[in-house]
Image (cartoon, rainbow, N blue to C red; front, side, top):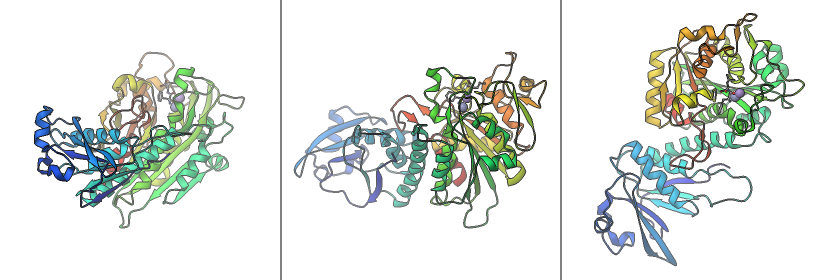
Length: 468
Ligand code: BES
Ligand code: MN
Ligand code: ZN
């Protein structure tokens, strides 16, 4: 269910706005025009309002044919963070209503509008819960800022929709169809083509499923020739049961979102043109369903990845790295990227390390790591850099293959780091970044810009990084 809300900027305050939000700062707003009987400053003094972001004073007002409400809201220090908090709160107030008219705060309103739209996101199959906010109108806002914010929010909503879709609907072929609906060239490898070209990791993970795997490539070419070619690689496991190394129900029931990284790649590429990105970007989504069956790969199987490297699969639940390894090796061999960024719900261990508020960034290149951390700070998809500890590399030694996909013993631990070290083996020494979003890809709460379920984490981050 896509974000239904539309955002527009208008010049004048509509006389009949049912829900009208005004920042504390707009003290100048004539009380009469808002339909108030007391000046804004008087009201705020009466309620002892401090002006913090997240503060809201609701005042019922007479409107043509009924009652409306004026929402006086605080914006704190006016930072993007404060703006997001204030805006999300407003839309949450408006959920269950048709329209919301907002007088935005002073300054750059991009973060404000974006947060207002994201907080309006809903996903439901069947009868609607609270009706969605149908329209958001910003009075006197910069139209271009509203348009950009809307493009970003729409991309986040697409990523959320894809990840929230149940796996009974969403298999690798379905994901490829969704990619093909975007307005960019798309190439899809089916099972036979994957076989012919040696994508042994994607095939091995997908072979237990009745729905065969796919590799999906999306291409964005900017209007002017680009100086930089970035490849984005997304983990596209449409359901992760663990395979024969089966997960317990509690851990399995969230795993329809195990293609969140792939969803981010599709959504980011779909928005690059409307945001005027000047880099060339190729997206790769390694899509498979990880299922146990008579045709599934077994713990102890040895597989051969794209490019010929062999891996002993000792745990079929460490499947993300197997599909990503093929895509990374392909990017290195065929696409000549200046930078490769993979994004994946890769390990439960990263949730233990960083929790649900920060995604992990691993990088072979300090500049690239810095760029991404900064883009994370600015976009609100926050990242914390994690170390690629070389001393732990022996954890992935195999006695019969080039590598093993998990540590067999417990000498090293550090599940997210060893997973990153595994991926690094396939990046071919290119400037490479790995984002482990297992902790942040799903939200357990309905709060701020987040809705319970898929978060679309990485869309705002990568769009910020690719368009700055
Ligand atoms: N998709 C999971 C990681 C995950 C866990 C994502 C929880 C979101 C929430 C991944 O494929 C996985 O199963 N990882 C294993 C790796 C282990 C077998 C080395 C894990 O984290 O337990
Ligand atoms: Mn798994
Ligand atoms: Zn997985």
